[in-house]
Amino acid sequence: MIAAVGALGVGAQWIAWRTGWPAIVLMLAAGFIAGPITGLIDPEAVFGDMLDPMISVGVGLILFEGGLSLNLRELRDSGRAVIRLATIGVLVGWALGTLAVYHIAGLPWPVAVLFGGILIVTGPTVVIPLLRQANIQPRPNAILKWEGIVNDPIGVLCAVIAFEYFHRLNQFPDATPFDVVPPLIIAAVLAGLVGYGAARLIAFLFPRGAIPEYLKVPVLFTAVIAVFVLANQIEHEAGLVAVTVMGVTLANREVASMRSIHPFKENVAVLLVSGIFILLAASLRWDELAYLRTEIRPWLFVAALLFVVRPLTVLISLLGSDIPWNERLFVAWIAPRGIVLVAISGLFALRLGDLGIADGQMLIALSFAVVVVTVVAHGFTIEPVARWLKVKGTSRPGLLIIGSTPWTIALAKQLQSVDTPVMVVDQSWQRLAAARLEGLPIYHGEILNEATEHNLDLTPYHVLVAATDNEAYNALVCNEFAHEMGRDAVYQLGENGEEHDRYALPEGIRGRALFHAGLGVAEVNQRHQQGWVLKKTKLSEEFDFAAAREKLPDGAAMLLVVRENGALRFFTHAARPVPNPGDTIISFTPPKPVAHKAPAPSPASSPSPAQGNVAADPATRI
Image 1 (tube, rainbow, N blue to C red):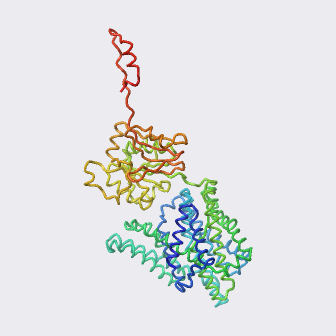
Image 2: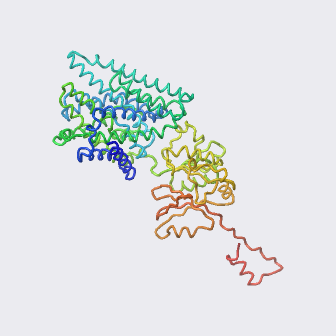
Image 3: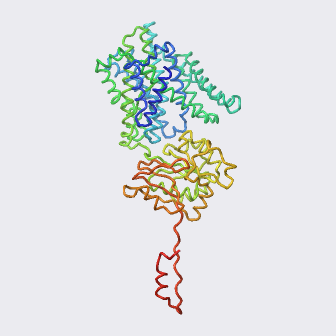
């Protein structure tokens, strides 16, 4: 079962990467085919009572990982919008969602109120991959990301409040909301304090060597689960509040050790998202789906959720704000639901049944309908809607150049001329002067400084070239960014000096060496001073790669190919991309031979006709 879930989940993620389709859609389809349709896997039969706690802990870890991606500096432009959506939006969304569930879906009031609270969540496990895939502008990107992560525990808290109220009402018919809400708010605050305290303890211990390096990731992983379980002892599902606060607190404290665990936490999140979606989809039963097969009301409800509830919630919440209307409309449209909605709906469906409330099991089928429809609708429309509303970021992949030198400036100019976004980064204001004079985008600062992540938006840049005079520093930059961009997307110039083999850095920490011959920094700069230039050549059906290669002068070296769609492919010692018609080749070529004119004859001597012809013949010049 574990092998099948892993293969289906990761396989769906890989197909999504290859095709550009939303990964969540493919994972739901894979789980549905493997479960109800073919009966290949049956999670409840295999895991039994362990299934719910496994999913709960997985959701908690995912929310912690999402909290680690939230930096308070991002709220400079979007903070007010996020606060409005987390306060006014929660109340408006809860009320409108409850009315839609009751009047359109036809579920009784207790189920409608509870499900209306759950519908507040927008699923960070779905929203963040969609935003990353669609390349949305920073402000709407930050609003949707923060809303997705912050509203997850708030939506769960609303569902808990509704459930506890009806549970209390079942025992004490005279109970009022004031008997339930204050204790639950206090429990949520206590859970948040537990998460905050745990984060402060980790931020204190890690930098002081109290935990060895090889144990930091396991300790953090175990601490998140422990905080989640401890907070759940205070109140049901309060652990989601605790782990979210814990993640946000750690993200906003300067803990050097946190940088080294980012790749691990991202991998854990991918595995958990894949596994949980497959398990939940495979757990469906045909009898639970009968409500969707025989009734039209649930589909009318989903349509109302898409076109009425969500747009009204956002537009009312952002009324009078400084957010432009195109961004408001984009945020109003994008609200896919994900794991938390399905997991919490399944949990409360069982509890409502225990209270004797009918139609609780319909929550499972309805929640899956909401997830599938919203993920498909928003996943396949986010890019065209973003283009239509003009909130899409740069579509062509950009190049981040580390080090301002005459050669890197020339490279940046050539790429800028073919509409490739470029950014030249250097910590020396004097070295950046030449780039500023050329009108190139620059960033003055240390690229490895943690503050750079908050001051410089790196989203448009998919490829990095480190070309400073310090090869070890170039290797350090490449090694740092390899986890983010991919090892095949970070490049540097080759080794310098005749004894480079003796002092060569290990290949594992270096970027890919530019040029087939692996030219070093000093050699490239020296050739540039001697007049070598970067030249671009556009290919066509008539003028193909072979013809372009023949026209290059002796000694010229091809540097990269710019595809028609903007993708950058560099020539290295290990890779030789094959250019196609429509691509542009950028080469590093030697200067053309200088033509010298023959000295003018003196008046005393007139040249013979033969001598005059020789002097006038261009073929005889040097």
